[in-house]
Length: 118
Image (tube, rainbow, N blue to C red):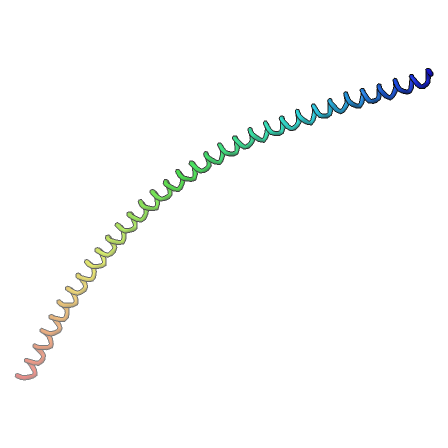
């Protein structure tokens, strides 16, 4: 009888120990899941914040680049206008000089013709 009672006592003791162990495992799994969820939530918030900051910086950089490009375009247009004006002046001077030279040559040719006719 003693061995039968002892056997049932050992079986009950093993069952209780297994139940207690499984409760500890379940508790550990729950805690790990909660910790993981919390860490994921924190990481997601940080990532969203960094993404927002990066978007703002990108927008500011784009705006600065657009302003600089507009300024450079304006400067280039002014330089082109100045170069065009200079070219027009030079062309005008060349035409004026060419006209004067042509008039002188025509005058010389007229004198030659006049001398030849005499």
